[in-house]
Length: 295
Ligand SMILES: C[S@@+](CC[C@H](N)C(=O)[O-])C[C@H]1O[C@@H](n2cnc3c(N)ncnc32)[C@H](O)[C@@H]1O
Image (cartoon, rainbow, N blue to C red):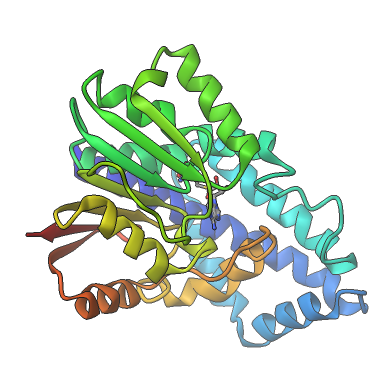
């Protein structure tokens, strides 16, 4: 079951990348005239100078073969549209990718986009079940009710996120499903130093490291586990696992306010080594990394 979900997640993310290659192939035709946002235009130009579209299109055709849930593409469509508006102005109001301003859109993508498939893969990989104590960094609106349902009434779930509007949706989802007693939602920055009033078994870092400092979030995660437990990381890209994807994905993801850069497995390992923990690390497919912190 774990392998089936991991393969599905990999396949869906391959499809998404293939779809963005096709979008970029058409978008490049717009770049002949000069736009106000020269910086964004130059970044595209520098990517396009090196990109071999004959090979990329061939690759894209392989990736977009087969069936996927079409809802995973919604965010890519909005990124494609936003890339045009970003040429006009970096803060153009039609760039609808903000975790605060566009929380209603993000809620849809978090519910039914790629994040839904990441959640399914995470819960199987970590065998999440009754009584588990989970902390979720950058929890968004959809994960709190999903995980807190799995852990049952004796489990505990804490979610940290800086977007009040997304947390508001998360809270109302949990209330609707009668889960609120086992849930704590905290509004804050995941990289700020945190104090934990309880210990957790599992720290979830799902699509958060590209918006924050990897070391600072990992420090909080390890402290939340109090020396023993599991950290699970999902990322649309680990830049040292699929380096050939980084430049194109960055052009699109950098339209999301506060995007920094995609994480690398090596930098996570460097942090763990320098912290002196005993740990086991394992990659599941290309997008899920599981770290067991041993006593
Ligand atoms: C792509 S969403 C992923 C949500 C959730 N982890 C999931 O997989 O469904 C990223 C989330 O991280 C939050 N976020 C981004 N940067 C953050 C930061 N520095 N501190 C706290 N939350 C942050 C956003 O508000 C958003 O809810």
